[in-house]
Amino acid sequence: MIRLAGIAALCLGAAPWPAHAQEQPEAANNGTDPTKFITTAAAIYEYNDLIPGMSRHAPRLEYIQPFGGKRDYQLRVQLPMVSNDVAGNDGFGLGDIAVRLGHVFGVTREHGMVVQGEMIFDTASRDELGTGQNVFKGTFIYARFLPGGIFAPAIVHSVDVWGDSDRAGVNSTTLDFYYVPRFEDPRNFMTLDPALTSDWHNDRQFASLAVTLGRTLGQAFGGNWQLYAKPTVFAGAERPGDWSIEVGYKVLGF
Image 1: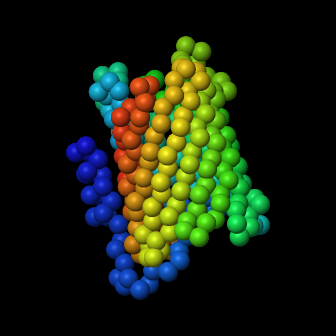
Image 2: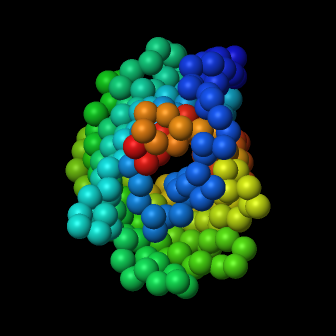
């Protein structure tokens, strides 16, 4: 956790603070609406408390680029570096690189839908830093626009399509109940993210709850910048860990 605190402090110290608070647009896209694609660059640090008594550190860089005549398509690339002490080597190495394509459609004043297809490639520099599999993750999101926020439940299925036959396979389904409340000050944002996961390959089920708290703080690099924290807790006898936390610095809309 000392290492995590250092990364968070670095983000706060290095980020460009706005000269005038009134320069912040009142209704800037903060990235929480899954139907509104926006150019995003992010530096993120994730810590996982694993069972039994193991830990994982995973800083990553992320870039999101909308495209198409209506900007209704989106490409996301994630480049992770990973450290864990499962095999007795806690040095950092390259993790599994992920590339995701998304499409939003059927958007009205009441609702919108999103489909996503993601490939998570077996690029880890050491066995314990990745799954050993090339995994396809498919997602369908139905977003309902409510007076007090956005309710956007999703179904996510992950399955290995090829990889190391000596490594465990991947086959899981997650039901995600994502909710975004609205705040009087649009610079503040929160997401509530309860989920139920069935790991079909290992025949186990568990629940999780993630809460994101963040704030858009000003302008940088031609867009708006924000800081956020996202703690997650896991429940169930077959859970993969006890808790995790993610902190990040993002620039959106540049």
